[in-house]
Image (cartoon, rainbow, N blue to C red; front, side):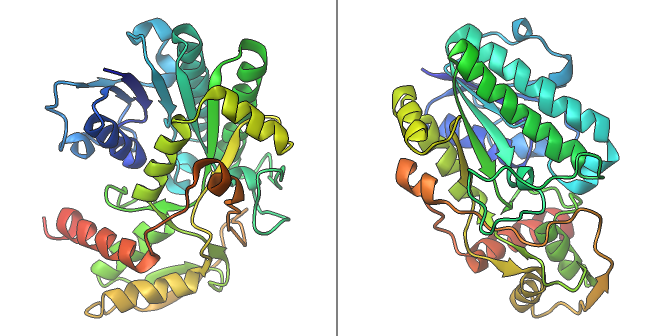
Length: 329
């Protein structure tokens, strides 16, 4: 039986990943400090004998605190929504950096395969559209989002250097906006905001004029990308990224369908015709990207992967979850 470590394992994505791994017969150790993750996210599989939950902060752990050996390590620990990371900016930067160092040292110790969950935010307010992996980004180093953006950029640097210096079998995914059941209802991200506001018949808050764009992938598509990426042999990965002129194995994972924020709000209300919510417009926050759309050419080529779940289908499932868990209880 293979054994996997998932940091951030009680979070939105981490808990879905734990469930997928357990379903595939893995033994899973999840680590989370429950800042944004919840024990409720683990309910469906908490009693599984192959599952162990460790309530701890990755900034306070050493490799010896987590008993291996592990075959696979997934580094997902970090607040990912602006509301949460801006509330604790120094903690967020340290979580990104110290969390990936913990995972890298465990992977090096155990000879494990590692996946680092990076982010589309490393592109900042991009000068190139759509965003592809050769782009170095346009990021403000001292802005209100920098704790997350720069923390993730440094984490990518560390992964690349552990590959070069220690030959660690690591790979990175730059995750574009992802949504679905188990999203934190107060995470401040656009889909959870719109769904919860519409369900509560509150004003739908749009920042700016709503012309800024995002792309949205359903969580199941992303978890499938994780698993496909981790199945690729190190030698194949090294050859692939060398041939594509990239100094480290990093790919975009996202849905290339591009929507304006206003169109998303209108689609949400279309799926909730009973809602009495109205659209209201407020000033755009600092450093908010104007455009966001992934180029997923490399993921298609290397993993034979692309998103399958249409936005409307994923929104219906997300709305049902939020209504059941956060409105009708």
